[in-house]
Image (tube, rainbow, N blue to C red; front, top):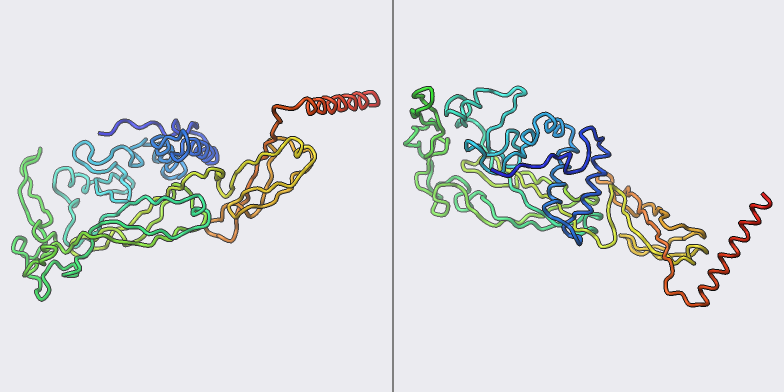
Amino acid sequence: MSSAKRDYYEVLGVGKTASDDEVKKAFRKLAVKYHPDKEGGDEARFKEINEAYEVLKDKQKRARYDQFGHAGVGAGTSGAGAGGFSGGPFAGAAGGQGVRFDFGGGDFGDIFGDLFGFGSGRRSRTQPVRGRDVEVNVTLSFEEAIFGTEKEISITLDDKCRHCHGTGAEPGYGMKTCPTCKGSGQVNKVVNTLFGQIQQTEVCPTCDGRGKVPEKECAVCHGSGLQREKQEFKLKVPAGIDDGATIRLRDKGEAVRGGGEKGDLFAHIRVKAHKKFTREGDLILSEETVDMVDAALGTELEVDTVDGPVVMKIPAGTQSGKDFKLSGHGVPHLNRPDVRGAQIITVRVRTPENLSRHQRDLLKEFGGAEETREKRRGFWG
């Protein structure tokens, strides 16, 4: 069993009554601090932070978590848990094949059928069969996430056998009635339980519930109808996608024996940290440094943006920490890529060091003149 997980509110450093904005701000602050691509980053901590945010930002998941804890969001186990069940009580759609305890209208017969081997919890020949979902990680540069891109995904998975087209029969041969289940797709057997001997109905292991088997098995897939091979897909990444997002490609997962529906492919997006820019929603944040004299007298400064260098005016008397806004140089909106946020540039004023005697005298003279003017202002009111 996996080690106990920390409370998600504790992970993000917020209270249980924290608003959505407070949760979001806490996440972004911690994500920037612990991003594994930054110096001093912590990949394990980053994953923990991201996992907590994925739950708390979603109202339904958060409600389930508040009521049931980690078990309510399928985060209680990894792999088989106690009793041999796969997945958590609320196992997600991405490949979860375990028992699903959904007391909001669920069938208790399904639960006891899975526990003791009887009831309606077993898949019958008429129920649809779906292939396994597949997950991959896709890494983007900061600029690729801002402007969008197209990525090649290469993955090895089960697909329909090309030789027999998924039938499992050697080309030129047909299908015949399964000798084990006589075409029913199900077999009966007696099992011993706490309640004594019970007759159990199961999917036929010979034909996997189809009721038919090949007259002659395919020489390539040996009757399974599946062939494991390398697949390549083009993933279109939209402009403005954020770190931690997931793109779903329908019917790009694994095939299943019997010609059922293919699973889906889930591409989890990870954005590399940029050496100069950080992101906050549709804003891009950066810093620029100016000399004390330029800040006092005003100047024009060439600043970096994701669109290239831009000349920005620094007005006279600019103080250190002053924020300047460059509209239209931020992150495109996912649903409206023609609309972009802004870039916020924080100006840091550089204090001169290692002054010459002449420079020190000039600064003292300037300071004295300022003091005299202030005194005159005070005298005359």
